[in-house]
Image (cartoon, rainbow, N blue to C red; front, side, top):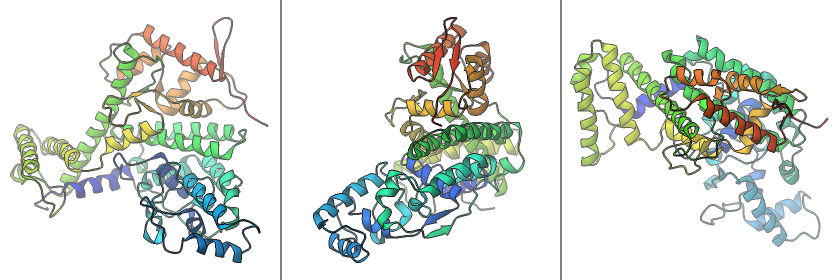
Length: 494
């Protein structure tokens, strides 16, 4: 048994053993999910320097990387006969700046010395722009591995799209593209206990991924634009990642599945009971994540040999070895650990005591760590159009979807040429995404059985579903018939 508890070490162990990736704070972006997911699904990445030499003109301070000077690039293109006669250096300079902005549209490209891939996640849509693992991309690798195993139909289709390379960005870069692929075979979920011994919640989650993914693939086959397909696919991955984080407590602790209540009222929480209930469903989600990590730290304390007596005698944990704390910071941690000891004195078992200290370790990490699981969820949900208000710092979020997110959900629930009723749509949203909107007693029962303290009634939920139907009709994805029956259908190209 180690006498000193290092919080960072414990969190890394819990993430590695039970989660499969490290949820990294507020700096993660949708493009990081795309980078990891697409590399994992394709099973490789490109090692060529040509794209980086052509498009990475300068870093954030305006410094030009060695070897990337305009004259050197121009001469190189002339030698390879990759530039037409009459095109001068000035025109090439303008093009290169456009290229850099294009690849960094999602603010995921950081030009560093040596043009290393560690901070590069391109906004692009073919195999040529897959890079080796970069910062924050382990999250995407995780969901990519899940899709390869549990929805190979969708993963196989996306690989074909990446292989094709017929999108406008790939065509723009065609004169400098090289197929120089390295194999990437990592599957982050394979050793995770939740997938080795699947309980009912895990099986339900994986069936939702399979059914929604196959439906999405069928819609993609009718869709004309590969870049739009990849964009919607990335939203699909982000939504499933957020669900996964919210379900960890159900996977490991046998707790109830927490529903995601979508708010279509267009009103503030002060004016709408549905908006307040949607806020509550988000609050439930991050509290569930808190409880899972408390459980994980308690399991790690047990693995390290800590029982109740040893914990009561332990010194206050620190974030990592040799990290200096301010006097105020040390006093705050000492107070938290002291309160945990007072509570644990009354614990009737070692497990109960370890859980109390696990909860406190989670609270201490929230103070000490720059990255935090709930911050990761909030950043992804806000930047992808799942959570509202869009301000990252706003503490009280609710589930209000952007039009792109709503389109992704519809294309994951309604096959091309299929016509669904409102009740069928509600059923699929729940089974495939854990979503409730309203419109029947089923949704109210799901919300009540999750343990939410509700101040929303069936009529308010019915009105929310009516607003949802109006939104679908405005997007031309549904029609409200003369008898009031809702019919949902999607178009596509042959």
